[in-house]
Image (cartoon, rainbow, N blue to C red; front, side, top):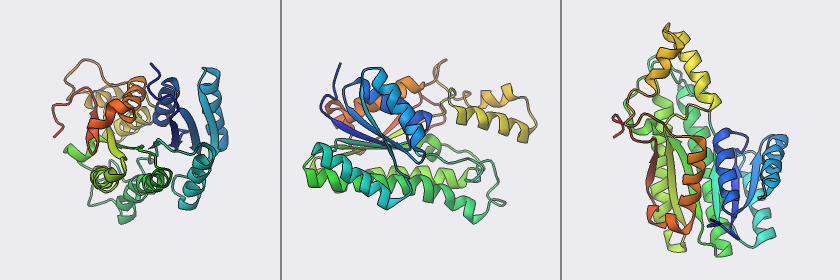
Length: 267
């Protein structure tokens, strides 16, 4: 189904696996997808893959932490198309920079603030700029924010990252209330651990070494609260994103959409 025909999407931090999955799914559902990254080569590789598969895509270079670059790129997209229908930001943070796995009594203030400034800060910059251009162009679009389920789990040694995740959820609700009068919906896609991603696999390896336990045992910590024998996949994440930004996703405005197949420990 081409539920996103004639829609225009911008994906920031598109060099990551999550953003790549979202970009592919939006294109498969008919959207024209602009993919950006700090390294243009990464964006070009993803755009080339989408075009080779029959989709519409264009690569660009933009730093999702640079307000001027974000604004300039979105202005370009609207100038070319007369509209902006959806924006997604897949920015992440290297877990050591965020102090993840480090006790709060040991983690530095810089480590605590890092995910708040980078992850939540970037979501704020891209979402508010997109909202501005949606309002100016009269487009009832979607701000699709992204975070992890850490905001509502009781996990030790993750103070900065958990605080950033909670902040993104609050930001989603504020933007929904602020921009709803313009027909703009704001939704947060909240993902559990995607075990097929390089980032999670690297964390399992490193955390098992820190804890002095076998890697297989550490991997089980990521699934021990699952309600189903299978977990979420990147392909499913992309399809969920495509649904949420479509007209059928409108009822989820202001919602935090859990993408984890069900967790016993998730509040």
